[in-house]
Length: 125
Image (cartoon, rainbow, N blue to C red):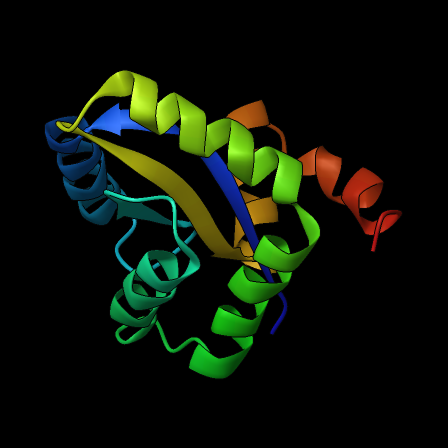
């Protein structure tokens, strides 16, 4: 299985919790997992990834490797989000998205509202 990870924003703790609850009610254990960290560190996101992969049937080592690879290759983006988190204050989390690529693609296609988009996505594999 192939995974993807990205930092996507800063959010209040309660907002992330509410989003996770809604997501689990709609499609439990499918699609993306949203990880939250109080500090912009690789260790916090690895710990968070370990927590969410347990019930999803994901390969923990591959998922963690994806997070590490992102961290190694995106220093500027990490510095940007670290600063945004500091600006937001202590009641906020840095949010990352970890997903298996196939499920994320299906999730994005559902947002577009068309099953006909599958052919276009197949061109990008």
